[in-house]
Image (cartoon, rainbow, N blue to C red; front, side, top):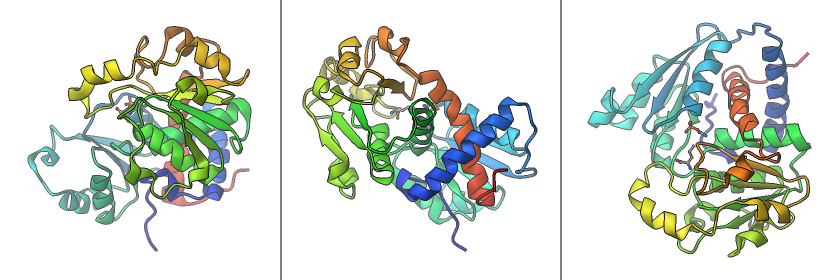
Length: 307
Ligand code: CP
Ligand code: NVA
């Protein structure tokens, strides 16, 4: 049987997401009630980080322990990955010693090559192109607060980065719309939107227009990891793409605000918005733990019947 990986949001169907959202709620409830649940006893997760992380490392490592398994952290600096070992060779070896692998790296191509040579499921913990685990947590958070996301409008304000392109894939799979507003020169990547149904998104030059009537307003850092050399130019280019109270006021009255974190108050979002009543950023962060437990369980054990 072919191994199932989670490398992009579109790797799963709507039916699989419906299962995962329901399963997440069950796992979360059990965890909050201090009920031990160890379906992954003796299973090992290897986490490979080529970029920094707080939430992704913590949520995967804690999540695997909470499911009864163990997690091993590898980074580029302290492993042979940083000394030029081919990714194909690393995948062969690492996947013979573990049951599931999570990778945070640069180009999507790296994780695709790793997965093609892996004997075990591989999860994308962020690449330059996509961040599917974060969008999984974000949509779960939206559902918890407002119910089904189908037919809703998400406003993306800022950089057309890995988060933005993952939102577009999610819109197609789960049938909602994304209004994207980016500064000139920082727009959507044609290669990444090539396969996305054009009816799922619209591009706005004015961020206020993108936010108009939106059910969810979301943004991310102006400079993603790996693009630090562009920081000064980006600070200037993105100045008018800061999510502020005015943008939230033109959104729907019950609109939520999300940010995957880490955030820079005074850059991509004002303190008033991220620390305000419409912000659900802490729930988003916490839900990384719960959705990824459901994800690892699904990739390793398939569907579990919830009693
Ligand atoms: N949102 C997110 O992935 O955070 P980290 O970079 O801290 O893992
Ligand atoms: N777009 C950001 C997300 C960090 C979680 C980055 O890639 O650095």
